[in-house]
Length: 355
Image (cartoon, rainbow, N blue to C red; front, side, top):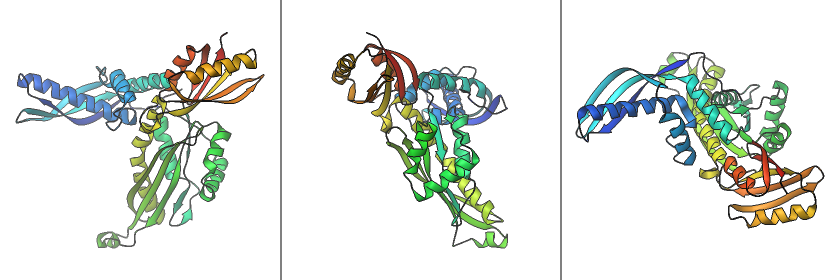
């Protein structure tokens, strides 16, 4: 898996940090700078570490990346500092190493799976279907930059898929199966002209548009909806296309963090993505009797909500397991059930039976 980064090795960010004054002002100042340093790292790390994700994976990533960020966020200058009561506040600029963070993200994703994501957004501008999709392009790029594997159908296929999705919302899961996607990021994106336009814009010859983005994240294997959020954005421009695209860009920009955060939740099996269904493909059962005995042992295991047999033949078996944890955690448990895990990808685990 390749984690893409900006050509710039470092990104400069200015953040604020606070600390309670418990002993000396010098100690509080140092703690406030450290707090600002963590905030700077969080900001560049983006959706992988986010204050909204107060769950197991958040602590995992913060421990692995932010709290061990010595050298990743380098203090350039303290811009301002003040004491208010028992709280010391600093505002400081840091240079954050983007490549080092990308390596940490890649290590995290290597441990928890490498989901294949399909981004599909039909888009209309002033009531007319658009041949390209601003929201789709921006969300695809944002997910790729965060280390996720985004599927890339041909332009012809994309256009046909968007048209199908406009007429039949259920098409997304069928498309996901065709392209081998683990997750679908989809919805609708519309940009419409505003009825009321400020006089200042009219006099400048500018149009005003509002975009509405209904974004969903769906587990392709189970159909479970992991996220649904409606976001809006406003834009202005000299033409309907310019104003509409600006509005769509702003709406899509707001979607990047919640979408990526929910995918991390899905990988970790936490939050609303907990107890998702995994497909476990096992080879090597010598007989149906051996398979039945293993299936019974799995069904009586306390960690699994449900264990369902999907197929048994010479090519192997397919079992669906509902589990409230990460793919890695499930793989560890399966290793204790006479299986040798040979692969973990998204919500799919491949294994070999050990007699």
